[in-house]
Image 1: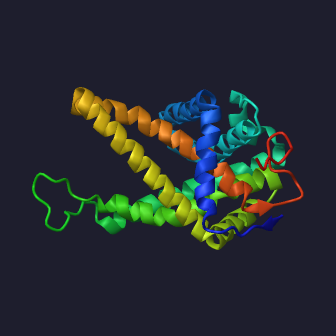
Image 2: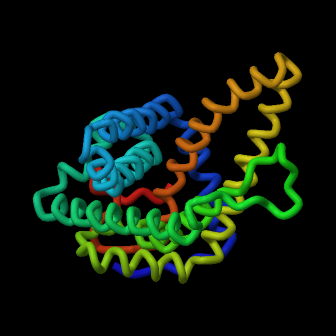
Image 3: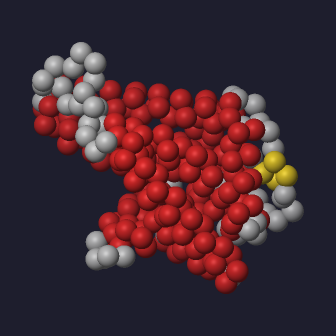
Length: 259
């Protein structure tokens, strides 16, 4: 396995490929994303251990959605069983994936707790804010900031464990290195997705207001946001595919797709 350093403009390619692949199989990819969300909601309702189990399953679920995108990009229909790809890859890789899940859960809880502690437990008012404007949730801002290294560590880690058999510790390290070396492409990728979200949200919001007022606009925005999130997850596979090259093929069916 070796790291590929790609130009910054590749970030736009990743966005386009994600959108194009999603539109090839919109019902399947959206359905799998909603299935994942439903499972998370159910699991997190389990008393005492629900939140822990939900956190542990995040890397495996991320891998499942990436595998679904790989299937769709190869022209195949992603079946629901693709979501549990991590649990069908053998005992050793399953164990590594669960180790990643434990690390993610512990680190996420620590980052959230530290963020709340640094914020002092109270939202901060924005400078010049009026009484009608809600205060800035400084705890949320600190939490997001502290989660940034976590996102970099786990961006490629589940895929490296599953498709290249990398150990959990090495997968986290390689993920950070890959994100850093391809930082330009990832920044373009993130900014492009922000632009897509803002554009779609603005257009649909205006259409909703024109057609039926603010209530209809809000009703339209919720499902649209979920569909956009599903479309975004369809692009993550391509960031991994183009960042690494290895002897072991990186696809659920054993063939690496470069389409």
